[in-house]
Length: 116
Image 1 (spheres, rainbow, N blue to C red):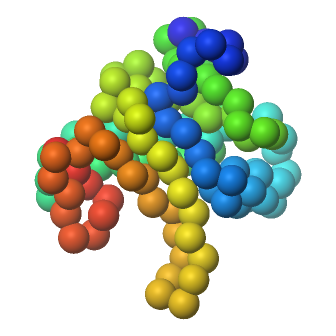
Image 2: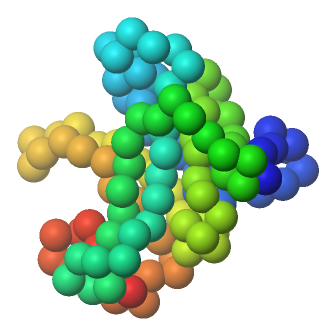
């Protein structure tokens, strides 16, 4: 399902700082057709882990949403596990990076990259 309908809630939202950083990274790649793919995969120390990468290909089943100039693509199985999640980017004294706050996670590991 590909959609940009504003009536449908995206499975994951991006903070303004995440949108800005993703847009910068896509610009650095030099390919404005790239989308940020966010996925949940089996594995990690808590059962599932997050995967994020730039993708130029989508399928008819993918859920696609726009946040400013940034396109985000999520496969249907991952979308179910990400409903209500928020992707943020922090750049501070203790480090920089993306983090996902997922209300569906009942348990997370110390590294913050896996959940159950």
